[in-house]
Figure (cartoon, helix red, strand yellow):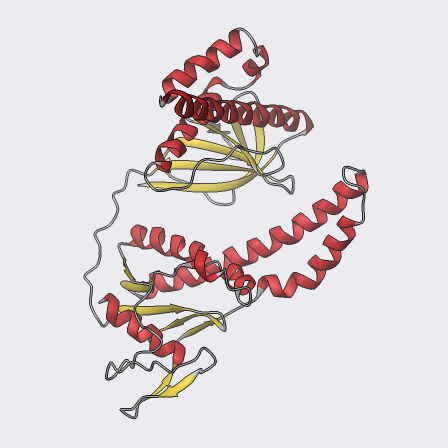
Length: 360
């Protein structure tokens, strides 16, 4: 079973310069390969594979771009391989690969040649030698690939993918008694069919006043100046804080679900269509529903739990969970309603119960 462990590293000034050079060269190779693929396919309907692109990179290093030799050869090869995978996934229904920018997160991968020091306080990386690392938790297994990244807030991380030689556990039996329905909402982040609710923390809303002041100050400064770059970092740090708070909350909720239930039923929401409603777009974007589903899926695989998805058009909120009658007159503002059968419903808990029933 493959698992990834992420740690923060603390390179010195010389190592930062080397990493900046590697980031740029890997980005250059990726963008050049993508441009080559696009030109070949649009002009002659020819698909250039990663092996042909790797040969072209070697020719570039020998002739026109000798400075590419400053990067580990494997980092350049992994960049081409990632491009080829992204380009192949496009024909399987995923988005078309985009050109990389130097203003966003930077990273490069190494498939081998990385190891920890004896005291586990440093990590050996090609071209960088030993770099200080905060190994806050140990990992067990063989190192497969290592990804070194730099955030827009100038923080450096290393993600180590290891194979712990374990098989994924067998899925638990699906039973009604150990199943739960999860209704995702805005008033509360999620409501479970057994009545438990997780409140909406509104991380973005709590920081929006500070963010507005910082962004207004950024707009008043001359672009590219020292004060502009300094204020830009302030804005980036606020966004980073919001993202970290949201991810931490999602990890806590998903861990609770996976630890306490064997089967989790979730509604397949069309988030991209829902954010087109300008009244709820910001609130929906702040929820992180897509990331929530990702966390639930991989944590369930690790513990042998089941995740069942129901259709997005199933009437979970408007249908009575007792008699099955659909209330077509139910409005979004109606948080409680009474069915013709006499059953009084909490809108969200009724939806979670229906999601569970549909899933099972």
